[in-house]
Image 1 (cartoon, rainbow, N blue to C red):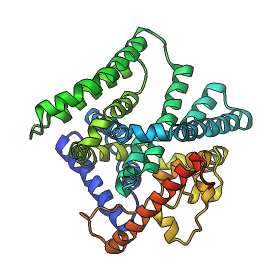
Image 2 (image 1 turned 90 degrees about the vertical axis):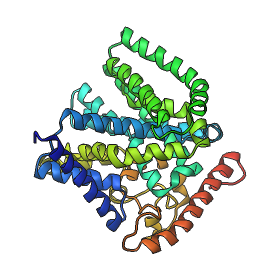
Image 3 (image 1 turned 180 degrees about the vertical axis):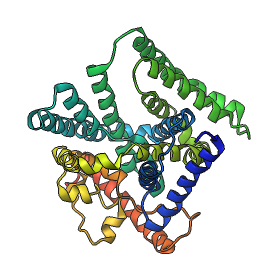
Length: 383
């Protein structure tokens, strides 16, 4: 499709369909956008032009930055070992399981087996954050712990790819040095700059953040790393500033979720080939099992019903064992698959009033679980 405006109408139209559908099926719009992208990609063939790739990439970078900006340093220090253990175990357990299965059962060569292990051991901070915002759990301590654990997991993926495939050269050294200097300077300069400029219609604060993300992302790409890695780190060092000014991240989320992230999620879905899924369905299922998931977990097994109130609505019994570190991270992938309807009062659909009434109780349960985790780590009680 050569006409850029018609192509834009197609992509935004698919995003609109996904948004409306998510209201009626009470599933996260991120998942619905991926599914819509998969259907459209196989049915009509979505054109992945350079501008689509640009918007999708910017969406991933901006979402990752916003996820980092949600991390309260106080919460990170308080639950440091919880986040680290969840992220580390969540990376190595599926990585080693899939690696062993691919190498010793399927007899794949080592490079292919390593790629399979890395691919199925990672998660997506952008996807998890999108779901957290919809459900409101990005504001809870438990949500912040999960977001921090996702970063640790993704960092493991980046390091593994670097150790196996990266070329160590001056560009990589330059990227590391510039990133370190930027992370040191930004907490000092950005708050002064934001206060000096003040809120403006032209959004200079957003443009400043975008400039930093683009610059570090460009260096990361040249060095053979991932642009989302410095984005999350920049978000973390600017988190105190963004936590003080709630309006600034809100405006950036509006831009991200309206224009950018639909391209990211729909593009991700469009890359799924139906023929490959059907012909390799058994292999895909075997890989899911080898990464530590049984049949029930593959179909439905969110980490805690405080995060996924639909599970409680189904009548499932809450199991305190679900909140232990390794178990929680192994099922972080379920964040992408099963989500309740968001509790925003701006959208009204079937069952909306009932969902909103249930939302308060869900938030209470989330805080209860968070309190139980804190008490457990202090040694005051056992889970």
